Length: 268
Image 1 (tube, helix red, strand yellow):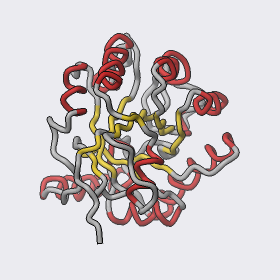
Image 2 (tube, helix red, strand yellow; image 1 turned 180 degrees about the vertical axis):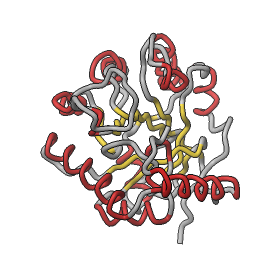
Image 3 (cartoon, one colour; image 1 turned 90 degrees about the horizontal axis):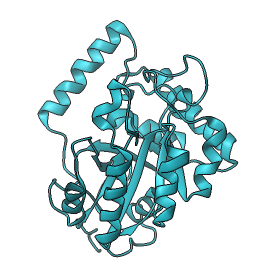
Image 4 (cartoon, one colour; image 1 turned 135 degrees about the horizontal axis):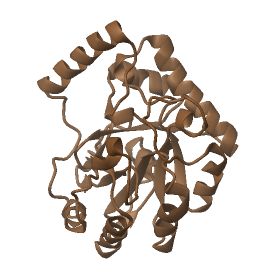
């Protein structure tokens, strides 16, 4: 039996790409100039960009990964995504995967995300025309590992259904808001029909990673093209899979207790 390779696979996590973001997302926002430089670093690094479906297939016994893959992902669905961000990717022939918070794509209090310029549900099909694969990112963006079973089921099922109705095909990929997940959440995701799910973990993924807890590297405003280049060489972060630390487990228990007293909280 062949053991899956632990060679590092960078899975990059972006949020908004804009010059003047709202304060709550500013730490996880890169400017358009930074973004273009980082994409140029991806191209110059010689890695093959693939959508998450390609990595997920390799993790579940399907077709092997191409040599030196990289995955570009985008969370939430900010207004820049179907416009200049998608255009910058298309100009460089870089496929990507976008995970959309469906409650934030329509007017009204449908999400726990604070106010920000967001794309609309009507724009979702245009992302696919730019080579961007679509995944779900729940309805309201809560801390999934603190929810009661009925709440968890709604977040996973409704977001999937809304996107499938908009696109006319299955949406089998999920991103946990802020990466928060647990064995219970992963089991529910599988039961709902997701074949892959991405977390955060601030780590490189690999062909040995868990398909329902794929590690990603989150881009902050302080990251440069040089940081991306380091990750592309397989350095600068640990490589998944690895077990949760005691600190992570304790933090989950604390958040669950808080949610029991005060209800679902924004994951961010």
